[in-house]
Length: 431
Image (tube, rainbow, N blue to C red):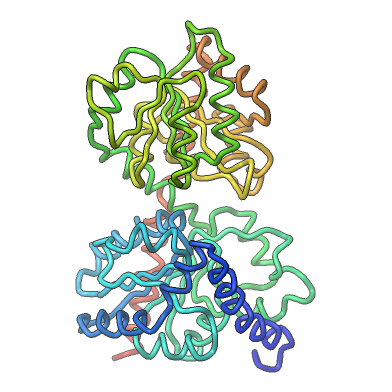
């Protein structure tokens, strides 16, 4: 049925063009594209074969697009490992920004890139990995992989999924992608609105579970250790943490802080989204600040600086613990980053405009008063100043943010209950 669809052949053509386009971009010097191409050479297949040979029993395959989706997958991976300790776990990534940071993640037995989606790669990948179960996070709907899983009778589950009316699944010309979507044995959505969209197109096996990111940020908050240098830097004053910061976020926030009266001006911790030498050097020399890189910090220098630059990956979710206010980057550009990492600590969360509206947690917290959106330096100055001077309002906003995270916890348990059912049915079928 799939191969008779025009959409199938259009997507098949796209699947040939896309890797070729990435290679052209990589050849022009784009580092992320180069990492994408280099990660999918013959060594990838050898890595998969070696890794799979060490897993004698059943295998669960988890796929995440990048680092953010991995954080959604992580509580499910770890719950699965605890409850099914004899199963092997294969974890794949689409993006270098996920794979390069988490390639040594010990919760999975094999961590690799996912070969690009094509009829040939999907057959070869499943022949090598031989998964008994496949799990995809949020937006991951790779047609050839999903259709091949369906043809082999291998259960596929999507969790923390979110859908919008403008997606192709809900368009008159989206017949092929609706067929792809029907390959899932279970789809766990983040919200009821997504589930309603799926029911409208008669998509079976749809349930609302919520977003597993809430479980993950609560895990982090409960287990975070002490960061002595950050604590020393903070001292007795106020701290604003600027996390996942793009250049526009940095410009708006640092200029806004300098516009505040000196007596209420907080210290700033900046965690850039990309640790490029040029960006770090610019932060080193930002006018009006005494800056210090975390990698070079000592207790005596941390007490004299008012701008701490986090020049590593992996600390940000723990650093938010030391903030009085957080600004999360991305909304000026490609899209807002994870505000839940900050909100879970019970602090007000700020971000830019306009790329936040597709993030449910952002719109929810804006409406409830736990978050604030500022599009200009003047707006940021006013909002930060108000929160710093009105302790009651600042505390109330933080309590809204924390309560929101706690209220939406529990998606991992719901997903795991579905996996128990799927695995139980498959075990009976195999007998």
